[in-house]
Amino acid sequence: MTDFRIHPITEPGVDPVAMRANGGEPLRCCLRDARAQEDIVLFNYEPPLPDNPYRERGAVFTHAATCPGPDSRSSYPAAWLDRPQVLRAYDSRGWIRPATRVHDGTDAEAQLTAVLAEPGVVEVHSRNVAYGCFMFRVTAPGDSPSMPA
Image 1 (cartoon, rainbow, N blue to C red):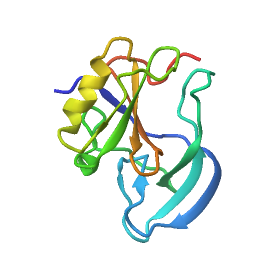
Image 2 (image 1 turned 90 degrees about the horizontal axis):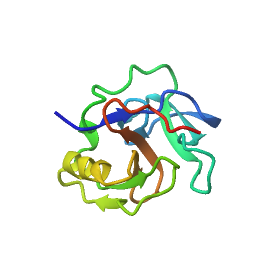
Image 3 (image 1 turned 135 degrees about the vertical axis):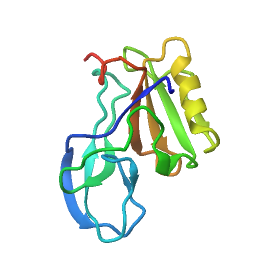
Image 4 (image 1 turned 90 degrees about the vertical axis):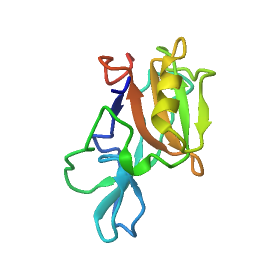
């Protein structure tokens, strides 16, 4: 049993561009990579954080049509278990915490659980190492799916 809850993107962002997948685009709605020729959308997304200097917006992919979401919201996305990621930790103000770290794709669930367990951390954003783009949000079980504004 894990000590976190995964929150994929469930709402569209701004400036959408519809396209056909080449294959491999990370889909933030179902937390897997796109297959070639799937209908996807690239858009600007702003993860929910209180109004502060750490808020940012960046490009992400989702399915073009409604997606049923990931297979599980209580375990690390299976398709991305071995993928190195930045685990960016935030406190209740939405400020980045020193618990932020890069994991090399080894034991992703343990790495994520450790960051979330650090004092003051209420939310973690998984981010792509190469591009820095947002992948998904994580909170402790029972926590609100978004920080207070």
